[in-house]
Image 1 (cartoon, rainbow, N blue to C red):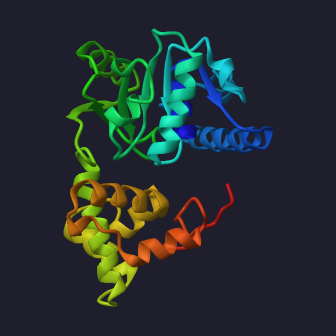
Image 2: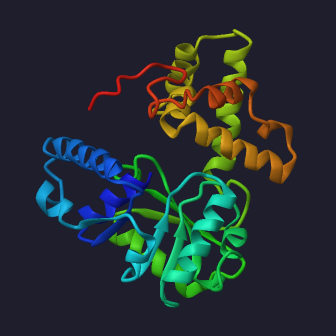
Length: 272
């Protein structure tokens, strides 16, 4: 998600400072951006050439180098402690007027904001994968989030060509609160051998007019992310429909995360 969000902002003319942990990651990201450009060449509506987009991206491997930023979007693992630790560090480094946004897909905005001395400056901005294509952004308001910050984010989404929906803090927000039980139940159908993965997906594509079937979508989102979101929803609500399928747990432990790992409910080529 981080690389998709970076490309989205850079392709709309923003100067983006992308935090990376090492130079090997920089090479991977440049290869990703080159793949994006190859796709853009087939699309006449591409906003910029590769050179102009990449020139807007500046790689940084030290959080202290982000001091000149006005708006920070965090898109690390869907883990509440990791996110709190990240914002706690950023809170010590960045000026008081910097806006913090988390791309969490299910976690508490208020709890994440509690790791900072400026909870009113933190908001949820949930982009969807792939960030450059999907039109929706969920804007999630924590307990301390100001209306002025919500308004800034609505305007930002408009500049990015996105449609925003506003959500008061609520486990899973809108999309994942509805989507995750469907994916979980599709896995349950697969578990008992009632239908193959392909037939489950075909049924929902042709019978419900979904562009992707639930198991294809799980692979696209990432089995690790699906497992984490369901775990959060189950913890927050206690409702059995959110308890992750045991197959999802096994896939998570095995590292079969879907498209990103090359194997999930389907197999994928890892070549560009």
